[in-house]
Image 1: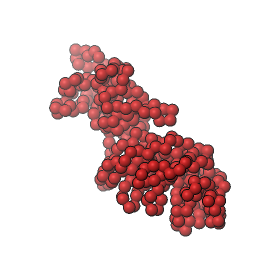
Image 2: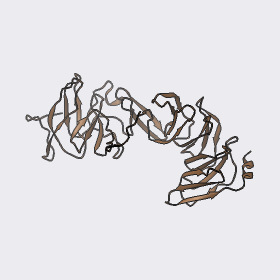
Image 3: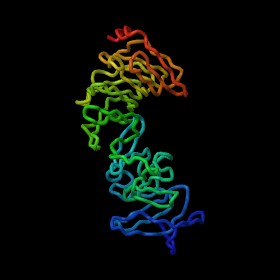
Image 4: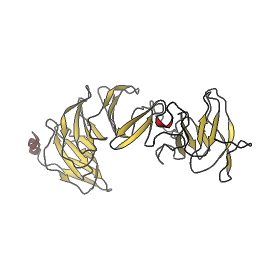
Length: 325
């Protein structure tokens, strides 16, 4: 990277003074950088006491192995047909291979829409805020309105966005579902066991049995899976029926059946003991079914979907449950 005698990098003849990230020795460095649509690249010296900011462009990686390898503490994994990359230090995932000069976030991915995510030639993630015209090593945090609640604990560990959550009454643990599987957490954020992965792509929805012993999940492959919560293992084979991703689930109040809603526009009812459907699928006008919930009496359920209306569906006689036995 070339710096001119005035210690400025020029583009479009616009200059703004900004403060660069604070280094580990708490020294602060100020220099002029250009303002442009893409983020500035930051080069941190091996000694950790200097930084150079410059215009967005592809650079050579200076970590061991260079451009042919991932930066330190990064990992690569496959999600369906998409290769993704995670910075394990910040628990951030990108679909773009981490290389200096490459923007790693898609617009709207970060909690602060004014920020962009990049990586320095030595493999450290940094963030450029176009509103404040600053760079920082710290991951952007959401702004909290005055008087808003402050979380007791922030739990990090999933690679991708979290689609569904459930609370376990007996242990007060939390079960979370994401594109890469299901995980269980203590309320202090400590993980319980390993991630549950039964195949079938991302997990879109989960619902816990009333006695906290099992949880049913719905995935992008259109199948339901029943899990033993204590062991973190799948019970039996996946339940087949939907033609598209399962977006919502609910147990009946007596726990004798499960309702599922899907992107195929149907609601289906299942016998949890056999994994078989207990009635013909209910064709809705939602196009996609996003929500389904049993009434307290268990004789009907309400659904919501692609359109803005709600649909109340009354079950047939409970004798239909025998079809799944």
